[in-house]
Length: 305
Ligand code: HMG
Ligand code: MG
Figure 1 (tube, rainbow, N blue to C red):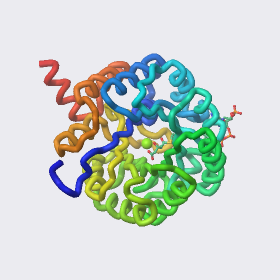
Figure 2: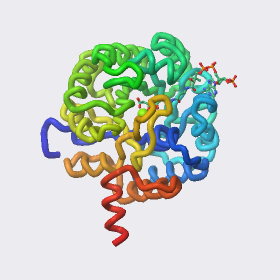
Figure 3: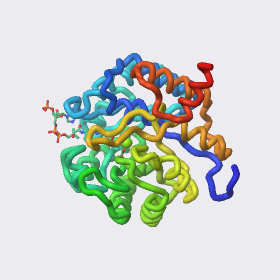
Figure 4: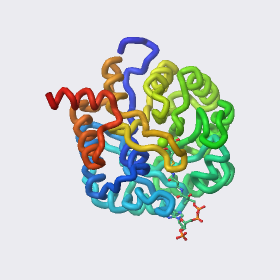
């Protein structure tokens, strides 16, 4: 660890099999998704968002989630999580023994409508029975806030608005709040302002950052968040994906790029970098495209010479 301001260890939340693959046009079989999840587990990634129990009409790519959770060979130390927008989704996740679930709200009214077909307030009402059922089933719930640094429909979003929604999700019982730059428009200055506003209401050690890399700012934004004391980073292997309801938004920051940077900063993650690269190459091959990760492509070029 090179700076006393930075955390010594970071928890990497791998969202590739969910956030990544939910937006890929090329169909990926349940079997290939399972192989990806298992390769990530073998690489030491110990939190994998593995699917999403949403309407298959809204996000057809996630329709295989039940099959994935049923057939997956699980590792003891890995948390296999799923997104659940309503009680029906939660019950589906529970039926296949998802270890954890995540509810997903937004700091923007328009995005909330486009993504989950209800207002922010209505979404919180829909989440309440999930929280109750999760408590009974002893399942932890993570909370997402989307559009924390901008909205594809409304443009700028006030940090205070993000803080209010984050605080509500935290007060409902979410153990961690993931702050999503869904459209990837943030920069270190806007990230800093937003995290300062949120951490005035939710403890910094309960916050995660979730950056899409549309404007190429994700790594530098992560560095800004680390300096503020954030210790949980969402990322997607091979830089997969995006959100179907945020047109033009590119994939999440690549896990390979994040781990390469953290290794350089001497921040531990528990991830075997070589095996992570291989997991990224595996899924990129299935998708018939190069990884959206500069680090991964650089290592791939070395392998091929
Ligand atoms: P709705 O139309 O308001 O709800 O959708 P509804 O209750 O009227 O149901 C509509 C249809 O969906 C019905 O089917 C229901 O049975 C079915 P039909 O009668 O028309 O045949 N349905 C379900 N099916 C399976 N599982 C369910 C479920 N619930 C209803 N759980 C709803 C509301 C929330 C369901 C819908 O809007 C939806 O599925 N949205 C999901 C959108 C989504 O997954 N977006 C991507 C994930 S969020 C994201 O990527 C951002 C994030 O990464 C952070 C960031 O980057 O910022 C997390
Ligand atoms: Mg996302």
